Image (cartoon, rainbow, N blue to C red; front, side, top):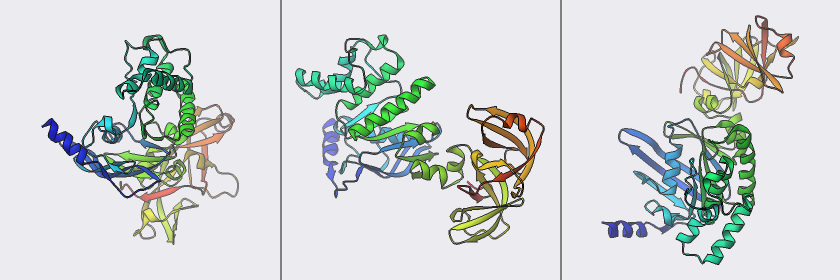
Length: 381
C-alpha cells in the first residue's frame, strides 16, 4: 500500500498550461468530516507574490482550506495546483511550502539556530550552507545574536519571529500562516503585522494568511477571501470587500454596519435608490434585481456614513441617544432607532464633543451619506 500511494502521488504531479500570474489554484475543492461540509466546492486563484487572506468566523473552513493547500488533509474532490503543477495527492514535503502554525510549534530542546535550520537539514544541505542561510533568515526577522537561546528563553514575539524564519528559510513557493498573531498582545500584534507585510513584500513570496480578525485582514491583505459555512462568499481587494460587499454576510462581518429597514424607491441601470424617511440613498442595484418599487429591503450603512442631521439635510430617521463610546479620535454615538434591525444604530463622529452636544436621552435626527451604502432584500441570506 505505501508503494501504491507513492506511485499515485508521483503520477499526480501533472504539468498544466503555464499561468505566470497564478501561484496557487483550487478548482472545486471539497472536504467533509462526517456529515459536516468543512469546504464546499471551493475555487480560488492566488496571484504570484500576493498576500491572500482567508477571513471568516471560527468553523467557516478557512483553516481546512489552508491545510488542504499544505497537504495535511486530502480533498474529497477537486484539484489543487501549486506553481503550475497539480499536487492534489502530493505529500506535504514535496509541495515546497513554508508553514507557520498558530502555536509556533518550536522544538523546545533546540536552539533558535537549530529550529530555523531544521528544514534545511532535512533537505540534506551542507552545514556551512545551513549556517549562512540561517544567519540571513535571523537577520531578516531581527533576531541576530539570539542563535543559541532556547524557545523558553524568548518572548512571545521572538518565538513568533523564529517560527517565521523557519518557514522562510526553505525558500518556499508558498508561505502559509495560520492565525500567527493570535497569541500576541495588541501593541505587539500591530507591530508584527507591519513587519510581516514588509518581509513579504521584500521577498515577494506568495502568502496565504488565515485570520478571523477583520482589521488585520483589511490592513495586511492584497486580496481577501471571505468565508462562511465552508463557502467562499467573496474574494476581492480590501476596498472592494469593505465598500462593495457581495451579500449580507460579508456586509455584516467585514467592518461595522448598521442595518435599517427601508424600501426600494426605484432602480435604473447599475444603481438603485432606497427610501428611508425623507432620505434617498443610492446603492448598487445588482443585489436588488427583480424587486418591485416599494419592496422592503435592508439598508447596510457604516457608522462613519451616518451623522446628526443639520439644517436642510434630509432626515433618514430619528432616535434617542442611548450611549457614548469614547475611542480617542472619535466617539461612537449609539442611538435607539425604530427602523434599526437591532434596535440601535451607531454614528461614528470625529472629535469628542459629541458626548456634551448630544447627552444620553437627547433626541437626534440622523442623516445618511451617499457613498458605499448597500442594500439587500429584507431578511434574505
